[in-house]
Image (tube, rainbow, N blue to C red):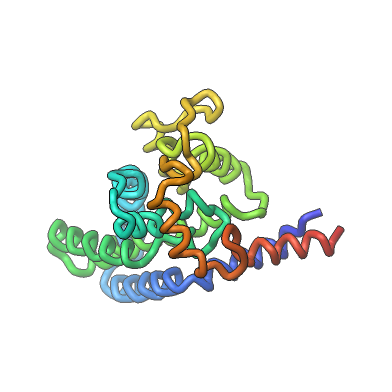
Length: 248
């Protein structure tokens, strides 16, 4: 029988071992502290909620537009897209390919912060909105890790997992969202539905590329050495599987 406690500890360690998670968590706390000193709790919570709602929309549209948008023709350009997202489709059990890279998330965060400042014309409110946006991103990364882990989640994340596995193994052009409240965007834009009743794409595990495409092969080789275990899996899965065997 699999141990929930041991698995969740390993998943939690993997999450907090990711440097981008630590950076954004610290930044979120810093922004919160700065904003909380000049806002009421109601104002702070409301602005953070707005920032989170903005993140939920961006989670969907960035996935559609950038992660599954124009396919680069060159190997070098495709290498960036592979690290951004396609590598996660190709090697979903690789932790080093699961978290969104900071060379994408940090410029996106700066752009959002600038937009908040221009719209609100208020630095403090912009800080609170940005903190809510970051919090949304941190929750997304946690839920995404849980969905791909051996941990058995509650009914909501079990549903998300089912839909997300459809995105990975049935049709990469559907079921774009992970955050439970963001699922509404898949419904609105008709990219949801029952997995087995939806159209199946030809190569969902490689996000649309042929298995022998030179761009894909070159990207695999470039990132091969980044895994801390095998080419296909990170050591966290070895750890949880060993714990399972020992408990039997």
